[in-house]
Image (cartoon, rainbow, N blue to C red):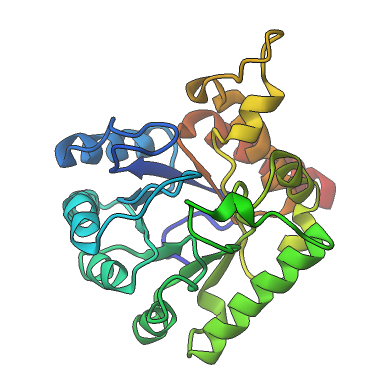
Length: 279
């Protein structure tokens, strides 16, 4: 999928949120120079590539305009690419995706799976860029009103395949498509666990699978204290690494995390164990 990246284990994608309002680290990396340094640090900690986003997609988040999104992400993408770091751009807009690719980004990570912008599939087709199609039903401000499923895994699978078929119909090379089951997007905490328990079924769909569980609320819930208070976001990294190991063992292509060090170790342990199983 991407030249120079490991093919013998699950990859680790580090997260740089150039936003004031992301659920985990909003505001920490809003300055471009600080965000670039953070991206470099993520690679030093073990990330194979860095995902740069300028628009929060946390539950309840409202959209920003395209100009502001570009102002946030383009300097960071250019800075990281100049350091030789593979970059994905986290965007739902084809206009942002196009300029990010021109700046050197290697992957479009579209959490709407091509549904928010009708031009996104055409962009991926014209450029040959790998594109992540995440399972998505609605924008963040209303997505948690859309958590009803007849059969969770079957319905997500069906909807993901519809997104995949739309991409192929638009001319996207199937070999460039990555799927993401969309943990936390139009899903309750309990539904997220069901998705994780069935990762092998999503892997079996064929395209590489990206799993993005890092620091999400459902981890805070399972780690809650005796008083019922959720574990703070920065206290969920060990649980995230556990999910990374399980995802790797299930056959995931990549895990998306805020703190790569423990997950980088976890996917290597999983790869070694998988080799033993095949021996």
